[in-house]
Picture (cartoon, helix red, strand yellow):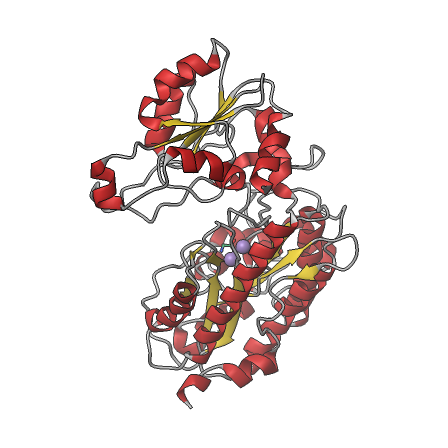
Length: 466
Ligand code: GLY
Ligand code: MN
Ligand code: MN
């Protein structure tokens, strides 16, 4: 029923008819070898999970919704099994009619009655091209500003941004399953095995709950490579293992949670010191999530705590205010503090700046400056990530440009020591990422059950082998 209400709410804001697509299967290498099908998030939000190749027409004049599904042929039944009849689909989805998607162009010709049509691009480019022909306008899922008309993005985006109760429950379930997965990874960590062996335990937990990965899991002793998805390193004593993973529920809702732990099960004194700084930033930022506070304020708070910590450890020098103004912290903390979470991991990330506060730009991209994906103010019902980190990245620490620019504020010799630690493999990186629901009062941390205190972690790592 919730999908029906959402469609009604959207319809009440439409000035023009709207055509939406679920998208189709996307080939991985050969045409029949495809990625698992995953419907477009806007479509999931309005209809729930569906088969590949569906579409829907929203009539802004009479409020009717026509749903399009693939024909029920003998051939389709042979390869894909039985599917609900069009009549059953109509009842189940509470739509006004179900039509054959193979005859979409012909049906749309009648339905639109000469009116201009709105449309949102999807990741499946063949589908986007099909729609482009109908509306006669170039669009792209991947280019900011070409996803769809701004007024439509604003209407749908603000609906999706604040989560309803059932959506929060789904993200909560994804977080619980990710808890099981992260715990398995901790328990099965030990020196001598490969990252992919630990990954197998994590993935088993997702699979046990009929979940997929919401994104390619980052599970690496080279956590300073921010999107390291290779998982081919051997774990060694002294390494830190960074695991950034999230289950995606069959409904499409995701978790996005990072923990970092020592392969040996014991934090070194240096690792402990950096970990405590990141943990302090994580905890203080989580507590600060309140209606009216935005990502920019959170970014500033995290930066302040991280800079104070690194100053105390002798990695930074000078006044905190100056360090932050020139962007020197960005050498060690080169990403945003968080992002909305929901059906997309970076929820509504491809909506561009349309939902950002008009007065404050969403991202600072100059060298070394932390990046902010979207600068919205938190509202009750918003779910977002909080993910501070500190990384020792050789290319940044040894960058002549950074050394010239930030020499006054960074002790590059001290930073170099971190790169030489651990038999020359380097310190790596630490990130601690949680998922949090903004309420009128105390924020609710949906991933709070996943251990992150030093003592808790040390008591768990490697215990599957004892
Ligand atoms: N897993 C990607 C991110 O944390 O944003
Ligand atoms: Mn993450
Ligand atoms: Mn994240």
